[in-house]
Image (cartoon, rainbow, N blue to C red; front, side, top):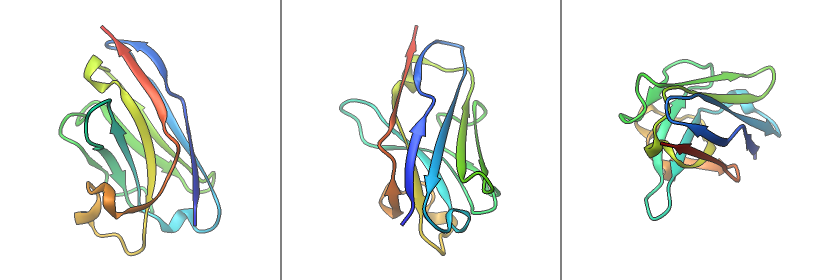
Length: 127
């Protein structure tokens, strides 16, 4: 099973940018579809973005479309989330997650379909 560690969170002003990274260890990272989710206090875990094993078929949650970009580097075993034009409502703990194989597109936005999770990284956007 893959182990995941997120980094890159922090405090940023509204309109700013951050880039999150997720480092994977263990076998077969390149076989997994990968996703980013977030959870704010008192709210349910929310889908942010997901991408297939090759970095294709990127999908985004409606609230981040046009602002966030998901990507991966299988050689480095890393997943990324470039976050631009940040808003206070983007404040949350951000988690990366690995899906199983096969992993159909219909699974991308369902956090229950992802089997491995990192510990999360806090992103705070001030107004």
